[in-house]
Amino acid sequence: MAIVTPIEKLTIPLGGQVIELQQLDYEAGGMSLLRTRIREKSRFTVFEIDPGSARLWGEALLRWAQTQEPK
Image (tube, rainbow, N blue to C red; front, side, top):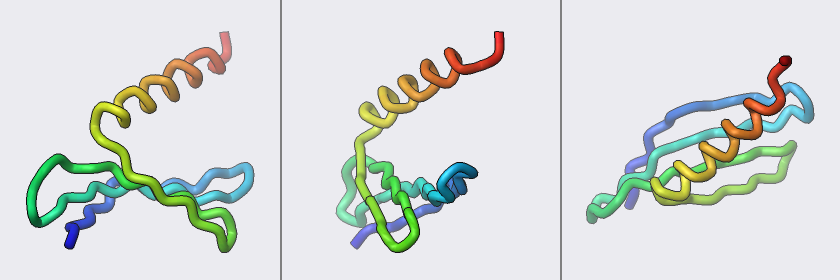
């Protein structure tokens, strides 16, 4: 059994996808995982990643966003 803690819920303006970030902690212990749920109408994509992978993904998203800002 896992304890699920909501972190963030975002609705994307273009396309209307809903992105939910949740922390997963298993009762048996171990590392926490980040669950990402993406809802597109009736379709769901769910995946769970470790802290190191979350850091790399987040840094890649930030790098891309910074190149898109008005100069």
